[in-house]
Image (cartoon, rainbow, N blue to C red; front, side, top):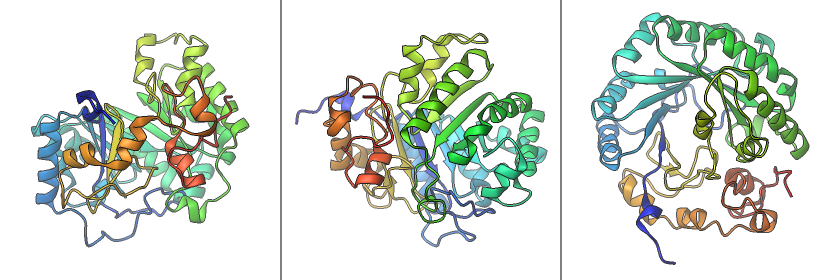
Length: 351
């Protein structure tokens, strides 16, 4: 298959999970975070070499996550090094370890935004997944970021028992001062596949949630994004949504908008695990190489799995769909439920 330079364009977003260690043990954790740091995590020096490659590559955003990234002792050192290399830095955190002092330090080392996990509109819903007391501690982390002028968003997992809380979750984000809300369509990978089975949305529930979020985007003054659901931006465009509080041009920042599933795609997304293993995305957990043995750039250019994903030679309904190129379905959900990365997305309602 003939390849062009644009096929090797770097990803916009690289997610680097810097540690497996976490102070919580969430039932739905895709990363299967652990109480202690893994012995084979990239060292500080190895992390710096990875960042050197990312800086040379010219990515758009580096997301430091975990586990809980604040549990790694050299977290601020890694963030500072990346920032000094000219890389825009975001952090994915459960928020419970962020106080005003930490928020100030994060801002000082060049971190531009923080995603704080909030999995419900109240403590009952959130704590049932993340542990007692974690809801108010996470809100405290958001308040600390707001005090220090460090932009933050709320990351919320959508599952069956949270459908009724969508409006409340949006209101909580606005009231807390979040700049955006990112809903994660639950895919049963990691711990979620063992301890939280049966909570993913069925296609009709997914359609209901998407339509509610699409209509909510008109009135809410924050950008609403949905991860693992490339059907969402299709409906935004189909209904010609025009937000009242900001330019509709900002909707183009919604994941997959006009591009489809971003896993392993040029100008898309890639994830790096704490031990250096590379996956096409955080939910498509297929090993395509390790940065300890090969540079991330070489992995990106040479991986047979990424070549397959980029081909868009999809099967079943996805292969016949008029939105094949601009949606492509969620490749992680297709793989997790069928074992075939090119299979039709079983979570899609569009025919």
